[in-house]
Length: 257
Ligand SMILES: [Zn+2]
Ligand SMILES: [Zn+2]
Image 1 (tube, rainbow, N blue to C red):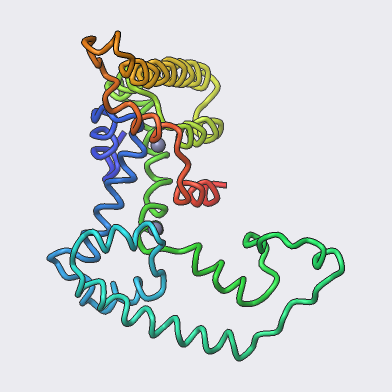
Image 2: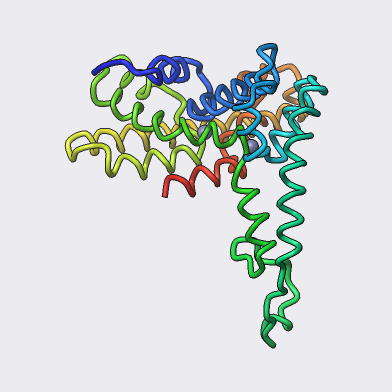
């Protein structure tokens, strides 16, 4: 098979010994997008990049990363034109707003608004804004190609298969994507071997984490005070990664459907 720009980063991610190679790739894409937006290349001064950040904005998680990145003036320049655009939209939304009709049943239900099914034009407008983020969109745009490349390498590259067979498996979220995607991307012969390896990797590595984090708790027993930590010292963060389902990942799930 011919190499694509996705092959080397995916091979690197498989070799990184991370709890999930796709989370590793996601972090890489995320950092690349933040650096591109705010870094020394000053892409935020380019009209075409600013048009993209003006339109997409950023989610809360990525605003936090931008703030932590430290280029406060760069962030301010991005925000100044983004807010100009937002305020023009806000004016338009308010000027044509009409409250949704309320039914007796809806008046009885005093729960939080259902943001998945907005009933007003303002609800729909903000839901649309929230479905975009300059950084998340960059990740989405590449993620599908990494999934495709994963299966191309699985079929054609023995080194990749071996990394998969000896790897730490995936977080539950990316595990589910692989389980879903394999159905369409592998023939019957490859499917059987693939699922068997995938399930074996998930079972043994989830169990390993359960044991590591349990040993972490037992280390606090004074009788174990002098015993070795083994691999359990950072098991709390690794368990959280394996089990996590971030908002970003939920969006990816929607895009794959
Ligand atoms: Zn993952
Ligand atoms: Zn984001």
